[in-house]
Every structure is written in C-alpha cells, then in structure tokens.
Image (tube, rainbow, N blue to C red; front, side, top):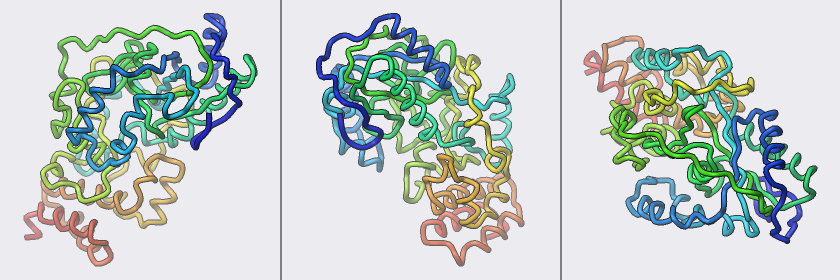
Length: 375
C-alpha cells in the first residue's frame, strides 16, 4: 500500500485469513482504550453503492466540491484507492464535550433562537477531529501490527475518497439515517468515523439494521430543505456546505435561512430522536473552547485576522480561512438586523466595508440592507 495520508507498513501479500473473534475482541479493547466507541470490519465490495453515488453526482448535488466528481467511483472501490486492500477497519468516536448535560439539545435550540449569539456546530468547538482520529487510528494500527506482524495499511478520516457511512453501516457501526449521517441505537449520530484500509483478511462484522421507520423529523426541520428525499442530500442547499465547503458568495435565497449559524448546522441531528442516546466523548480534545462556545456575533466580528488565526488554531474552523469566516458572520449579522434594527451592529458592519474584499463587501452590503435604519 502506498500514497499520501498515513500509508504505513509492508504488505503481507498472502491474503490469508488473520485472527478471528479473539483478535476482534482485542481490537475492540485497544480501540476503547484509545477513545473509540466502537469498531467494525467491512468488506471492500461496495458495488451496490455505486449507482446511488453516480446518480448523486449526476444530479450535481455535490455543488462546487469538484473533487467528489474527480474521484468518480474510486470512492466506492477501496482496492482501487489503495491497491491490496482486503478489509476496512471502521471506527466510531463520540464527540459531545465531556461536560455535556442532559437536555443539551434544548440548549442548542435556545442558542439558535437568540439571533445575536453565534452558533457553531458542536463538533467544531474543540480540537480538529482530523488530527485526533488520524493519530489514534494510527496507534490502533500499530497495536495490531505488534500482535500480527507488519502489514500494509492506510489511515483515513474524512480526508480521501472514502464512502465512510457506507463502510460504517456495512460493518455494524450503525445505519445511514435519512439525513445521510451514521446513526447508532446506543449513540445517535454525534460521532466521527474513521477507517484503516488493511491488506489483512480480518473476519467481517455484521451490518446493523436500520431503525428510522416512518420518522421524517430531520427532513422536515432542515432550514433550507437540503434533504430532498430520505437518504438524499443536496449539498448546494445544506448550511454546513454553504458555510464551510463553499468558497464563493452564499446564494441570496439561502442567506435568511442560515440565521445565526456561522459554521455548520446541527438541526437535523438536534431533532433526531436517537440522539437522546448520544454519548459524551471520553477525550478532552472535543471540549468546547471558550471563544467558540457562547460568543456573540459582534464579539467575533471584532476579531482581526490575527485573532481569528489565534483562536481557531488547532480547530477544524481554521481551514475555511478569514475571508469565509467574515462572509459567514456578515450573513448572520444581517439576519440579526432583520429581526430588529440595531445601530451598533449596523455601525460595525459599515466600519468594516472600506477594508473588506469584494466577497465580504457584497455580504456586508446585503446585511446592511436588512436594516431599515440603513436605508
């Protein structure tokens, strides 16, 4: 196995079965010690998922994420992505902060109802999950190598063309919810997923059955109607995509629906009945950092670029950059003005116009137009 993104080990090459239930039990024990909630083992034959992936791409639901189309079906063919792959070890890690109290969903809904407060997706308030999972997945692979000898492997977490939810569901970590996220009966959807592609013929773990039933709460709650059908998401309308992945102007038709969400959106998870079982992480990494939890929009708008870089160091937020951060804040401030005129917000927006680049300036102008006192 070779390539970028944590490729390690020497290929065993035999393809012979390795270990059994005893080894899986050891893997689970090692994984739990590293902070993972659950692990599974999936086969690499994902051919049944290819038609759905092809239709999703053909519909343009990936928006400006050109890399999605560029990788084509490699996402559904693990052995094409990493030659020699025989199995995929999947891992789930819960991310609710350790201090999360019962009724946390109500706290989040209340934050969304306060238009001058900044709403950051729960997962992004702590350390960048890419760094946390990748390092711990590698440690799990190292522990496995110590037990069975050197083997070829590659570690991933939301960092390569991998059908993560498909693999997780096939290996028993949960099922694909109608919002397209992984759901588990004992942990909801507030989790990260990572993988280790291996050239070991590990025993497979059985898939989990689905338990969404007739529920459509996630579909109905979505502010922009991005869940266009059960299990089908149009990323172009998704607030998480618009505030994180999309690097241009946010389409005017979706700006009001964004409300005070400046990085991501948790609505479809907050409303999901299964998230009453969501678990707090065992790790301190996902504890909320003070500047990102409970901040006001004006407080964040007052940051300069150096403040942004300092306060978001080591978080997933930093990767969107200063320009997109300001763009998102401008939209949220405009929505706050729409709720009630506020001369302080209007003055702060006007003061930022002279130094703003074209993208941010357009969003500031839109925001000011929401305030009748600026007409």
